[in-house]
Image (cartoon, rainbow, N blue to C red; front, side):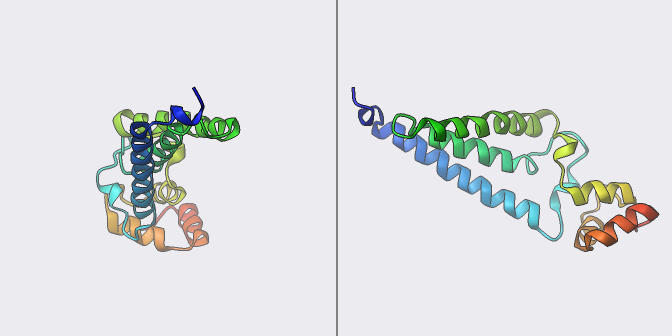
Length: 146
């Protein structure tokens, strides 16, 4: 069987579905990470967070979409897709079901907690996020932002 014959219409449809799903996850992740008033802080308690795991769901879905075209893509592309797929699926499932790793949180969120910003107040977090990085670091040094 030729390599092109291995790519059947159902396989192509599934690949396109996963790729489109990955693009949707990319858009949603960009929205979550760049919104001025971070809404994820209202539900994030230090454990799981589906909204924070969205970029990793995007990496998983995009690499799964490429996996459908394995017979016709070069081995180097499939190796890169596999290297993206494995950590993405681990972090996305772990982060949305059990625990989102603290070291993957946005840097401004960690600085806000160190500065004493209330953890579940999206407006205080948004105000802290809007500060320049130097002022955020100064607030951490003073540990009195309210």
